[in-house]
Image 1: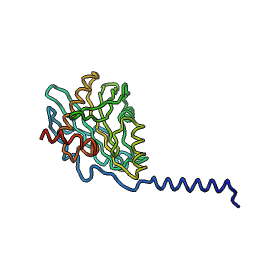
Image 2: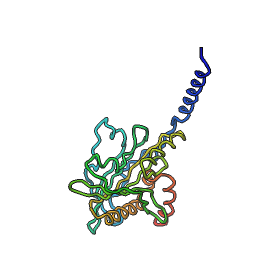
Image 3: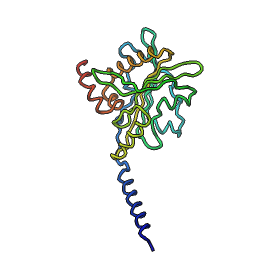
Image 4: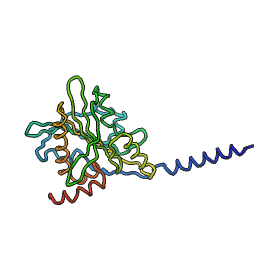
Length: 236
């Protein structure tokens, strides 16, 4: 026979189950769709010119976590006439879940033997007064130091920290969405923090100015793309 305590516990379990069911995502957000990043990514813009290069992250093995996480990856090295060189990595995943989440550089670089010396939020000016919330890092290993600038998009959010990334995914799930995500990483091999950051910021600004809207939206989300659009139209 059930007593009052059992009934209260049972009611609590049913309530929790109902909330869990209500929070279960049932819609998909895919801002990239059928767009192929590789074919739409420009190989020259502003003072920057690209050369195809090998993978800038460990090549995903079939069936591995990386293979499941990233549906499209673009990696290229760009140079400027003054000798500045940057490496661009764009990694896109069409589902951000508990098991599949973007790998933030401050977390994954140490796995490749780097020590992160500095990591801080960095706003990235791209058009007019529009800025992308990003992050800047300095990472070093036994033979080189990199200045890294990146931003991440999770659904319609642009989180600057791992906690913000988790919160963005949870908010999306509560709203009923399984969202996509992208990591855009720009890095320069130099020990000079100011010089490397300046090159990375210049590259980011010129890249965004040049991007096709079909690429801009999945990289930045709907709101920032709309804010940038008037500036793009004026340049056209």
